[in-house]
Amino acid sequence: MNLDSLRSSLQQQLIEQANRLELNRDTIELNYVLNWGGFVNASFTATDGRKTFHIKVSQSQESDESLRRWCNVHRPLEQKYHAPKILLNMQLHETDREVIVFEQIRGEPPKALTRTLSDKILSVLQRLHSDSGLAREIDGGRRSERSYADCYKATFHDRFTEDLAIIESNLPPFVDRKCFDWMQFQAEHLLQSVESSTAFQNTTRHLAHGDLWLNNILVDGEENFWILDWDDLAVSDPALDLVMLLGPSVEDIQPFEITKQKVPSYPIDECMEERLELYAPARLLDWVIDPLADYIEAESAPAVADEVRRKNQHFHALARTAYESRYAFTS
Image (cartoon, rainbow, N blue to C red; front, side):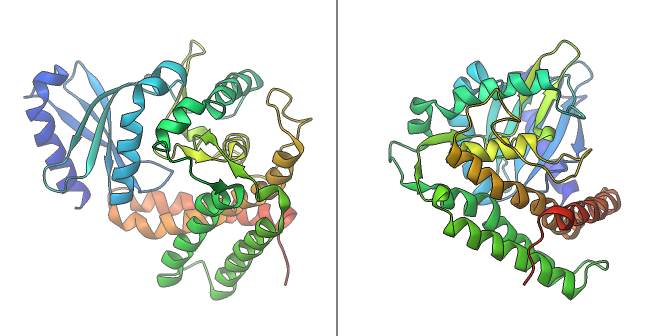
């Protein structure tokens, strides 16, 4: 479904739910929100001139499952972990895709992570990572045996593989075959390093948010903060949250490292520190590869395609320069 059709269908469904949301059905207006994290979901704001809501619409079956999982545990996430409040969950009539309506938060993503904000979020993460009850609920009581290597593959390598397939099928004009082969080689070399590292062989039973970068944090002028986009919440590697949170951002795409000395407010043990040594280049390589896939997929949103392509070409160039300066493997 193209963006205009999606907006029209969603608006009609909001009119049907107007009483439940206390909206004036005659003045509902929808506006598309560009998500720099990609096109897995579509986001909108809805307003009737008095009230405003944020809306997330799934674009795939996999995303449907992720959003349903979030909805199933939204109350403890809102009460203990600074998640935005979910007001309504429904399915879009034409596609049966999941739709979540949130209360609108008057905040903005921070341009940089201050020490004060970092310490506050890391404190929340410590509680989340050790929440065994919520982990069992998320895992459906299965006690799945998932190694840290499995977590790396699901978060980075599988995404590299999917994105590279998209890129190879339609190379952007500024990407040649040599560049593509270089990206593929870096991804494969990182996977080999992970698989040979003893620090990645143990099993995890910890929760992780899974996508905790700066654009998924909102702050207001009163030092309140919210953590967004809990659709990747899973039993996973807590180190992934650290590398997402403390790694590159839209405003600062640079090489980085995370050590016990640099992050005294979080208990990093030796095995986690070793994993972080490989997560750091993987996270920066993600900034090299993912913008190219988004560049291609921007065709699904023609109204913003030019802006998306311009910025993602810029992100890719910055990230490749940064990656080559610190991490690049050679054959």
